[in-house]
Length: 222
Image (cartoon, rainbow, N blue to C red; front, top):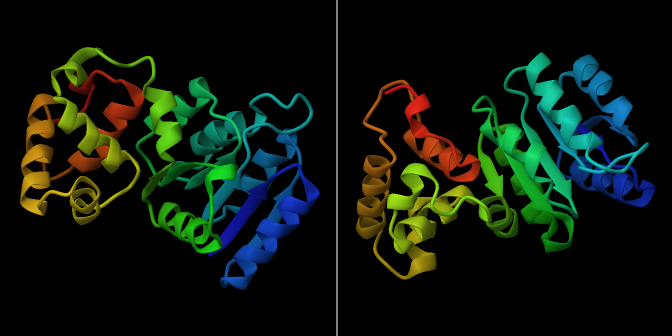
């Protein structure tokens, strides 16, 4: 698996490189500033990019901006954001792009190396990995918006756990219910979000994106 890292702190950048290489990943580029991110991604076309939000020269949201631009030039580029901050505007734009894997983890909440490496692999494989705190902050201003307002408290809880990338079995274990009960909640969620069965669309992904983006689900094909 080929990886590009964008991280301005030298010790952390070197640490991430060493960790990934110890798990049979090839770090093809490791950059330390915003302007270098897009050229590195377009030149190397990695299997996944691990990008900090705030990079030089302004330390605002250069990393996320570069990630969004990169996914325009390289549709489906898997991106894992690894940061201390949740930047809502560009995060929503990144998450709303349904092409390719995406993840958002907070540095101080990644407690194990295996957890981080697993997240990188899941995103590279096209999955979604979200820190629960990121989900909470992105949803802070979305309560009561559109079809989401029709969900029950338990359905929102189930959908929130889905947004973290949990399987039905993991959701059931977390909520101390059966998988059959979780499946029932998920089907109800699909119905309330106007997502009928479709052979072309992954309704689970679309439901999570609707939840994270606060989107009007009528824009999704049915």
